[in-house]
Length: 372
Image: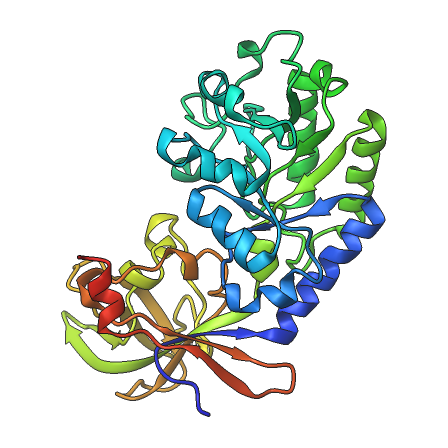
């Protein structure tokens, strides 16, 4: 079967490569790595993922259900704020439950059974994230409890501390982060059983110092006698798949050519507009050279800003040409919408033997059901 357009395409062999590296980190550092659904939630491949990872983290009732139903285990759950109507169901689907504020902890702790491990999210007040929109450790962040809000003694039923302030970071950033975390919370570490170091550990990126990560985690675990949990989002699906699209039209205005593709940055790649970052396209350069053909890439939604600035191509583009946007499996796929009725890309997998398997196609009913 040929790959349809548009289509998110996962490469199974690349995913296995990432999972094997994470398994090595777990074994050599003595830590647990769990899947963060906000970064990768393609549940059709979970039977493979759960052979390597120790479960998943959930940030809502629906994610907790997905963990229980498709990962086959209860979730490490953290919600920014829990609701009365869903709290009982969330607790029943959780092995760990983390509170974002002391007010939420005090409101709900009496409803948490003894077999659920309770944690508090803390803010170490340091992050290497430079884009304010994505910085969870800013001075005005709504995420986590600062050290000055905690008493010397944690409540007896608090067994863990959780932080998440990195984003596609290297191990040097984690090393600096731990320095700030220990400065603020070291006196609490003897009172707990586990530390969840959140996500942003991009250990599967080329050049990441995995040996240093293992050493850093092992020393921290030994120093404080705590269990360490990591929940990377991007790292699991990093460089494991692409978004295939096709050129529908070429629009020439004011000396700028725009190739209109059958995808949308607004609907299918919102991070490209929010962060912002520009995805690579196979066979093109992010900055056109003088001898290349320059094209902006436009999406099919009606929003004027649904485009990426010029790429350089060695040959002129034509209607029907394929565009392959690289590394689109992490975060991108879980944030898609059907805004404007734009057709959602299909989902497929290139299996280990090189064959393509179409997992799902989306229809008008998928669009309509979200609006009823």
